[in-house]
Image 1: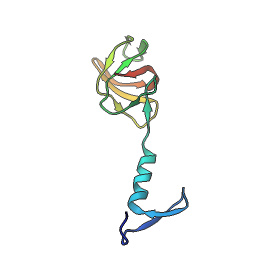
Image 2: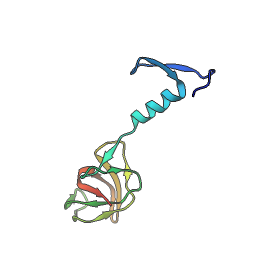
Image 3: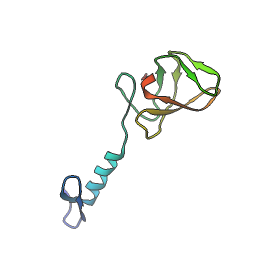
Length: 102
């Protein structure tokens, strides 16, 4: 229960006054992007993923084969893109629709 001396702020979305700490937590939760893989699993930083189809990597002259394991992904803030590291390929960004969480 909030203390009586806590500051209250007006929440534009709900039209209610609420404690400043509660409003800040609500806004932070609204800013997070949920990234899902091809089958609907929620992805997080550090997860391992497997490719579900062959992908040609532009600029690298390579094709990543189906079943390739990508370790330690990073979320980019975009609901469809994940940042990855793979041997010999710098700056690899994959679409979430082409991977499955391990």
